[in-house]
Length: 149
Image 1 (tube, rainbow, N blue to C red):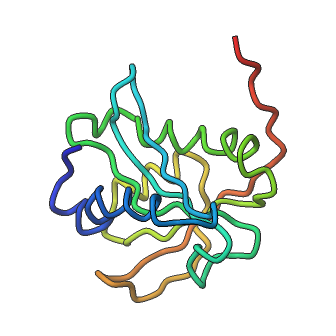
Image 2: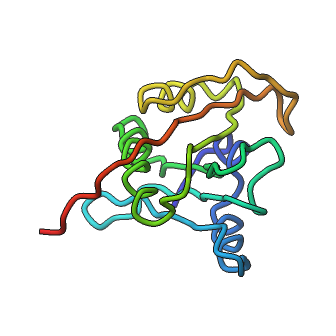
């Protein structure tokens, strides 16, 4: 996967995210490949429980290190993946009450994508590792998984 230097700054290298998955023994860190026609176009980490950051609400899952390959940016792939997460949560982590994330204020494409996918800005700002970050949340409702065809 190829990502820009700026995206690398926000999300870190992909190999570090994959390593975080393989090192986790609790089941509280999962990696998800974003596919389009069987081609990996993106990747994200999901964290919960003791693996979630201190700012996360109890019972939430946190998106971390979301990235979309440069060749596929601007096609709505990241937004589509974010919209599918509630269904995924209902299948695999059904006890999750909401999905949260922090996003750098300067990451305008990320902010747009999260908003389009139904995320709400919590109105909280903190000084992050790069600059100011905002916290966003998407409450989960009971979502009935689709039946396999």
